[in-house]
Length: 131
Image (cartoon, rainbow, N blue to C red; front, side):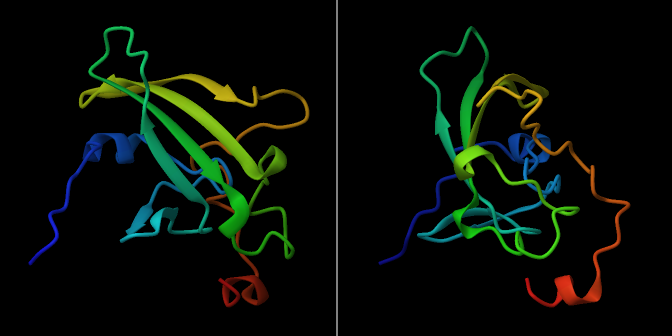
């Protein structure tokens, strides 16, 4: 008996997606556990949206910081999500994706980390060994 692996979401979606906690773009699937940001371990759960508006794919991505590493060390490398959760709705096709909305809505109190926002910040040695 063997397990069949289903790729429900295109590789292009994962190339578009980034972590709103740390800004990194690499995610690792862990069988029977989920998909996690390779840099900070924030979990992302992908669901197909009922509303497609004519796009090939409509995805709800829910980010959860319960598993995120190193919040207590330095907030220069990670930005927590309101109540530890954030969702984003993404429309698109394998040729390109766009964000429809974030929940909670970004405002003066919270903004998702932009793709690569912390790339030029050096992580201190005492932080890197804790991950």
